[in-house]
Image 1 (cartoon, rainbow, N blue to C red):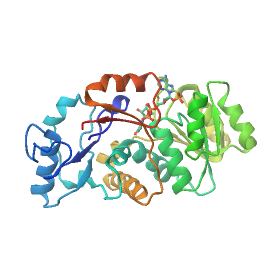
Image 2 (cartoon, rainbow, N blue to C red):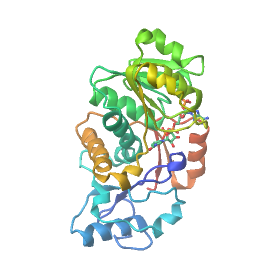
Image 3 (tube, rainbow, N blue to C red):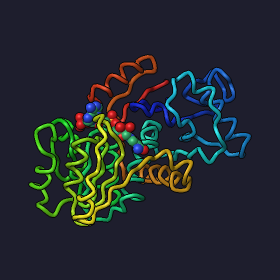
Image 4 (spheres, rainbow, N blue to C red):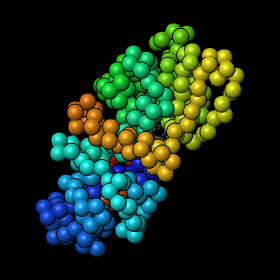
Amino acid sequence: MAAVARGRCLPRAWLCRWGPDSPLSPERQPGDPRNPRLALCSRRAGQGCGRHYRAALCAELKQPLAIEEVASRPVRPHETLWQIPERVPLREAATLPVSYGTAVLALEHRAHTRPGETVLVTAAAGATGLAVIDVATNVLHAQVIAAAGSDEKCKLAMQKGAQSVVNYSRGSLKEAVRTLVGSAGVNVAIDTVGGDVFLEALRSLAWEGRIVVVGFAGGTIASVPANLLLLKNVSAMGLYWSRYKEQNFPVFSRTLSSALQYCQQGRIQPHIGAVFKLEEVNDAFLHVIQRKSTGKVLISLK
Ligand SMILES: NC(=O)c1ccc[n+]([C@@H]2O[C@H](COP(=O)([O-])OP(=O)(O)OC[C@H]3O[C@@H](n4cnc5c(N)ncnc54)[C@H](OP(=O)(O)O)[C@@H]3O)[C@@H](O)[C@H]2O)c1
């Protein structure tokens, strides 16, 4: 099985598994060029550093690639492989690299979220959104306001731990947040939508609030009115998870190690919204593009 189509991030990270009893392809042993993901990773793990992995997350494939191109990409040594603990199911592990890595980085490293603070997350039923709810609620003990574009998605966000929800297709996000928390506002906002949703989230911040720009799923990049930053002493900051791999590898690595640890400890519960076969990859993309997906969408190679 391998990960994971997510918009333009395909396949930024792959789940790799090999060994004599590999369930992926029993007739193809590690090193077999017909099975490139296994060959690439087992070669490095076996010869490069003498380590063996039951299963590992591989984060070296950083550019959006067509699936058949994966074979030609080199994989660096073991520092770009993360052992998947026995207790973590492979499908759950496949949800971790981009979504949970981003959630951990946004909440912990960028926004320095503290227990009891209020976190507003947009596109809350998406892959990143649900990961933010999970980490904020179950690891950091923050209070989450989940904002999403339909009642069904809001319901899912509540089931996953949000304390309150806003359906922003029905009206102003800022007004709805004000109704929930009063004029004090929220301490942290994590935005993956951009445009007006971002601006309303920015206007919902409390004194010394922090907003993290993660993505522009809505297609519009907003400009930041600097006076809003001044008036309430708020901070607006960007986040580009995979850039940390080049710029600050220890931080990047920690996001994956933390996500795997939280999963192993049962503190987080990744949500897999749909699983498609490899030959259904176009349907998988449509499912995401048409805004029907929730949580992570997996491509299964089994
Ligand atoms: N900077 C980074 O390192 C980083 C890391 C991860 C993701 N991202 C970015 O963050 C965004 C979300 O990623 P994701 O993996 O969470 O995606 P996802 O699971 O596909 O969720 C995207 C969500 O965005 C919302 N959305 C609002 N307007 C949309 C539109 N016009 N078209 C499609 N969706 C729209 C939808 O939720 P509603 O229907 O509820 O509005 C949709 O479910 C993407 O832009 C991605 O590239 C960036």
